[in-house]
Image (cartoon, rainbow, N blue to C red; front, side, top):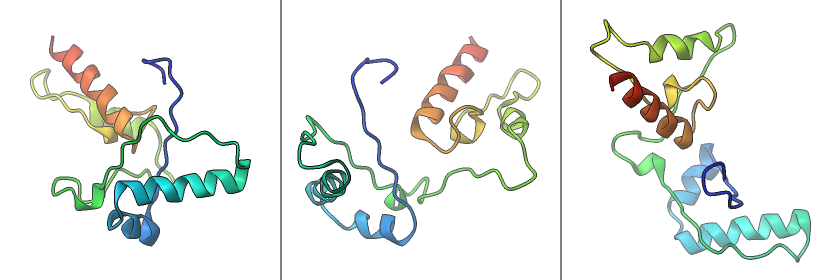
Length: 119
């Protein structure tokens, strides 16, 4: 991880499989991920020291959505979404992160960027 200097494994599941995982317990989700990792890399894959499972589709504010750049668009579109309005209204969120769009860390970093613009 860029900030903690500790290894981090991130899994991202979407579509019907992602919906299926939302109904499983955290333990079941982690167990399923470990089964896949051990199938790919062998039985020597260590167990995680911790896990965090999110359920974005169940979140009333995101409802499982994230930004998407369609064909023909460019990274400049993210910059346009991130631009302040007259230096008085500022925007943050994963959709304003040119480097990490569609991710939680992109949202977090964009919040830091917007806060720096305000300050």
